[in-house]
Image (cartoon, rainbow, N blue to C red; front, side, top):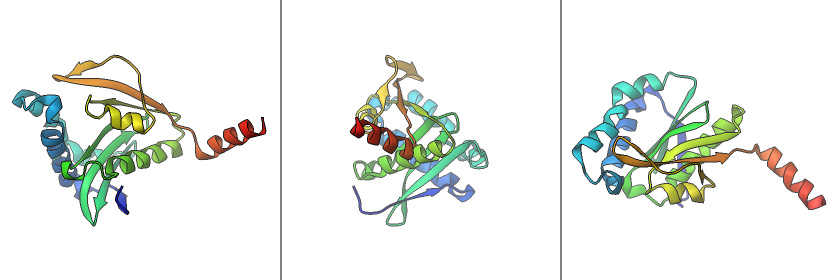
Length: 173
């Protein structure tokens, strides 16, 4: 993991950055999923345009974040107060540097702060191992969305204080 990954709440001026990171992550980082099929790629990136993203930034029920390494935007994520992570995209050259994990941890903290007790997402086959490392479990069999296999996953969110209390009770026996 890099020494310092800055996670910030996205602002309206970040809409273009979010769109570009999402599209590049899909086109390059997710090539194994879409096999460079132009129809599948077009369907996948269609909802990640500036026009789609800009209104999301004004919605208080959504959290959009931007991850920066050395001041450069390299990852983006979005979740809703319902507990669903809509996306977590990282620039391919920043894979395996802790960016995705930092984004997911930030989203989880935001959800916990809103009383959410369970987080859900749809993972690609490629990302499934990443989410498993973060404690997610598969909820159902794989299914197709727009020509890509998706895996429903979930994870319970325990408030840090509740987790500490549970651990101390188990130690006391």
